[in-house]
Image (cartoon, rainbow, N blue to C red; front, side, top):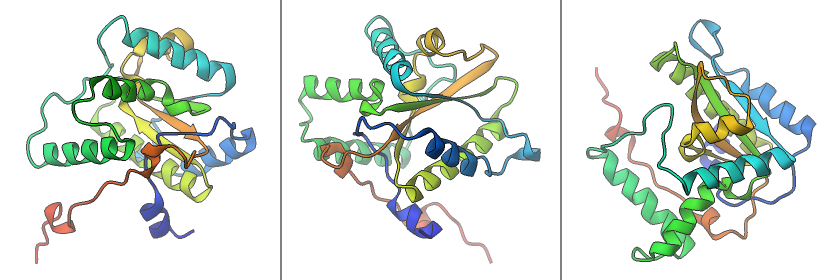
Length: 219
């Protein structure tokens, strides 16, 4: 698979087979992502990858936390989305709920869909991704490079994944299951496994704005 093919095929998977990914395949995936570039080669991503019972315990802790309090991520989520970002965000939500067959006024259906986020969409593996709190924007950019590298490698290898801020929304619950030290800020989680093509949410595809909306050609 060529890079441009992986870019076109890559998508957020929101429904997984329970079949675990073999350890050697996980190791190969992470070794490929480890080649991502970073500022002065500091390689700031710190990752905890769960399997088996640990995945189940992590998901249970996140679900329980969501029912007892509001999200309190280590790094605050954006509170305001000015245009055109808000339009893109709403179009994404509309495409997803339409794929799932959930009407705008279906409060219970939307709640159940939100809870599927915290259940890692049934994935057999979850990655929790963190970085040293002493770093800021540039290390976060490095972790973005790592995440994209991971996603393209996963696509090439026939694996599905979804990067989720929601899996980092309750850091105390994560730390109750995983040994993530407080000096590291939990950024997000990744659901990982084999895609279940029968799940309606996996039919969702989002659009992209033309290049000119994001890039100004000068000269």
